[in-house]
Image (cartoon, rainbow, N blue to C red; front, top):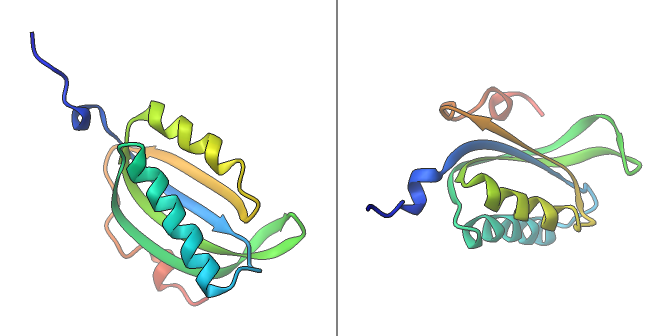
Length: 117
């Protein structure tokens, strides 16, 4: 009988998190580091990341018209991801997050990182 290796069950995800525009650069960095730590603590791996910066929102979220966007390419087990989502829902400075399961990660830099802000 063989043992299943933890990385063999990893799924690929592309993730966007939107943080409050009221954050100072130090708090913004702290929140992003906190997100990365949650991923690694739950046996996930961050493949790539991009900072898209302060951008307009399509609609107001918590009375904000702008937010700091960050893009991540992850490999993580789906059950571990649900634990992370529970933690993210408790954050006051996180406006939105989106995890999309993909078969392969797109090449970086993305079109949004090259776009004029």
